[in-house]
Amino acid sequence: MQGSIVVLTGAGISKESGLATFRDPDGIWASVRIEDVATPQAFVRDEARVHAFYNARRQALRDPALQPNDAHMALAILEANWTGEMLLVTQNVDDLHERAGSQNVRHMHGELGKARCMACAIVAEVDGDLGVNSVCPACAAKGGLRPHIVWFGEVPFHMEEIEEKLANCALFVSIGTSGNVYPAAGFVEIAAAHGARTVELNLEPSATSSAFAERRLGPATQIVPQFVAELLGVVPPA
Ligand code: APR
Image 1 (cartoon, rainbow, N blue to C red):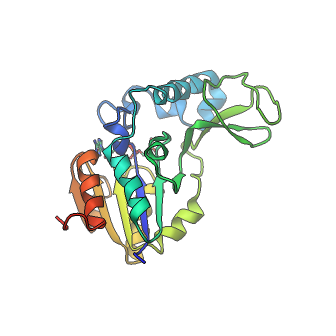
Image 2: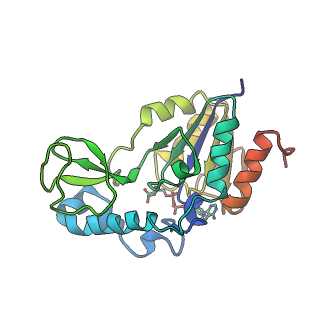
């Protein structure tokens, strides 16, 4: 049985599919302020504006031109062929990992395709737009649905499970994240402290790059399939 793997992905893995990252020069936070659309206070202050921001991003996911790329596919192949455990933790709220075939995925920052009712706490699939008068499909409360997204100042999902897997994995791989946002940016420290091999695959060194034992730079669609092929013994290590 091979050792367990924890993979962390960020917006960079979806860039070549056509989705914007957050902190690249053409990223989302270059055109809209976090304080206006991605905090609980923003939602209280201007709910319609926050819904509009996530509605636009949810609609973009429905574009037929938006498809999983070779990096998403490579991680699904790794999961299917790895004899040990593999947990895919993503900061991304898109569904490209699932559409590529990954099964064991944890969206620590939530999912664009889901809404949460503030009256009954149910989490429901949402396909179209959410609005100030959206009705909860479970309790029928009107106007209580919010995007099932973790906003700044809120606690990410699945943290207990993630930290337990990081403390027991043989390999931690971080892909397409700038290492600017905690707790995800601190995962490498937990894995390294417990003796895991740590590898960063990114277009450029992240803010936490020095904490990784190994790093490979390049577009995810090139360096992720190569790394997976090495892990599966299909090609010799570079
Ligand atoms: N291949 C690999 N990496 C890439 C590519 C690519 N084609 N394009 C960009 N990158 C890298 C960038 O160099 C950058 O380091 O992806 C990273 C994207 O960083 P961010 O835009 O900060 O996105 P991310 O790290 O996922 O942000 C974390 O911040 O705003 C919050 O909740 C939001 O989940 C998000 C979190």
